[in-house]
Length: 119
Image 1 (tube, rainbow, N blue to C red):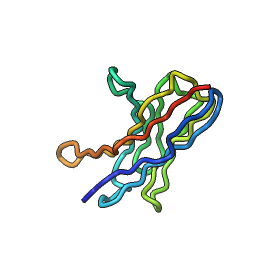
Image 2 (image 1 turned 30 degrees about the vertical axis):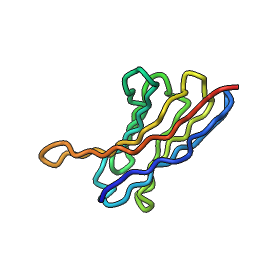
Image 3 (image 1 turned 30 degrees about the horizontal axis):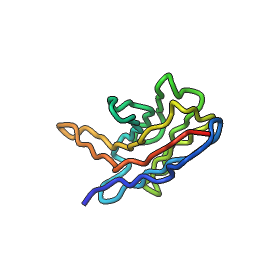
Image 4 (image 1 turned 90 degrees about the vertical axis):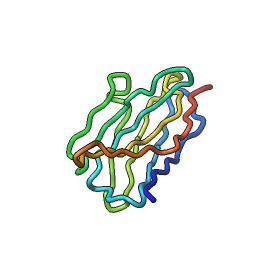
């Protein structure tokens, strides 16, 4: 059964750093584009970062550009989100998403990991 498992969330002070990981199993990871989303309770899920299947193309939300870096290791079936200079407004549950086109969109979500930025 295909699944995505996130890890690395936690409590960090403003200005601090965290690295989130998302490891895939049960799917051919290199064929999937990968996304990180975040969601604050009561608000819509927000796209944070994107990386294509080979890692050659990335894109970021304006709110995190210059602070967050998405990367992937296809040998380890893992995508990362390096988050620097964290702000209280980055507090959210972070989800990874795997997506590909196979005649229709096929996608899978992880269970989410909570990031809290607070002093």
